[in-house]
Length: 307
Image 1 (cartoon, rainbow, N blue to C red):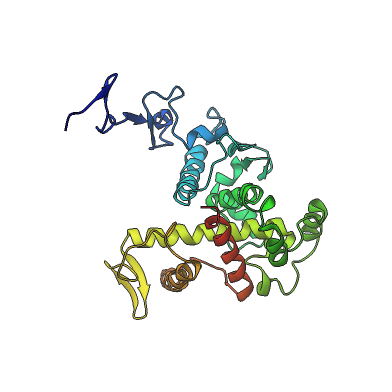
Image 2: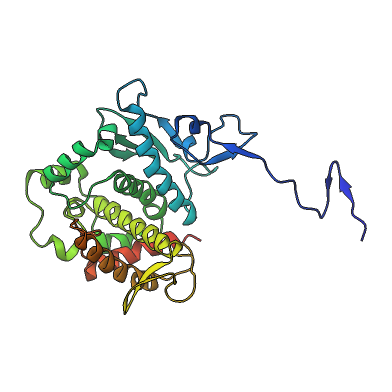
């Protein structure tokens, strides 16, 4: 069959492969992703989301940036695998953006996720963890939590899921600052374990959503990693070199929430046992009650119903 041409590109032939190069931030050893050679700013998709980076002239600034970027890359990987928008499409009001700065407040507002650089200091982070009585605190957890606020706006706030959200998580219209002040000035409600994945979840419905969202990302990434390493628990214990359940699945796209939980719970039990055998704290120091299970299922539905 004859092949016609349009300009220099043959119709019916494969387009020429795009050429890529390492992200410009590779020179600082903070990134190993790639970008197209014709990209003017020479930054990969993840690094291009940065608005503010740590002051590299300060002692520890570069080391902090490396830790922050390592955590952020895992976050962006998960978001891309889930097919979630990063807010840079034509219809998005606010793109997902990151500020890594010192002496600031970790949080989210209008698409901007801010992380205080002090969180990259392991000693200070542990001090804060104990001060707030948290069982878990790390950079990746912060990033997953804060991006939950971003995706609440795009997946829930303007969707048919808003009323079901209020039924499960509560009415987010209650005053946010008043709720946070009340939480920080008193102990969490005594029955929080039955209804929330963490004490902080009980502060306000937005925080409950963000904490639950973060745990959903913990689950998917951990199960995906376990599958990639050929290591998942079965009824007889931890099985190496084989995949549960004898077939590979894309945990980010192909599984129901129930099947995800069927893999997650045995994995956490096995990993907690491994951590204890090495004298460490639990790998996953949380309990998924029936109420938390329903909230996690809601997050799963919010993500996958948009596809």
